[in-house]
Image (cartoon, rainbow, N blue to C red; front, side, top):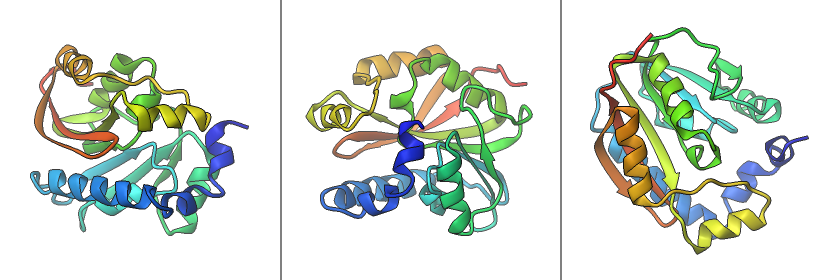
Length: 195
């Protein structure tokens, strides 16, 4: 059993505890603000690493929401909350056709990816050419070090390394915000590597 299969049973409860609830409240406000900068209309949104589906609340009212997670238990929790279009899969090999989504969200996921370029390239493959990517990344710091103690294997980036990663990937920053342990960033794909 991997860490996320184990954590599924208490994941939502833990996020309601102090100080996590305050950290997440700020992150949520930042994410909503970033999403207000784009018009999703009735587009398609994929939330990668959806966990129990809490990030799906950021989707537009008429958008078609899809959620992917590698954990069966997390997906089952999202299903119990009424989420639909749930997919168990790997973020590095999305079981989705190319040029399909208007927006991909990956909240709290980048720091778990060792192969960050491959991770972003896979998102670019399934984004439509005018699509956007909303993601977060965790900075190097004490609070993220504490996550290591909780059993997490993290691949943290400095701001400079993150900026180089984005540039190498052909992505452009539209807007960013920062909270205590994460930076939230809205990106546009300029790579021309779709399909």
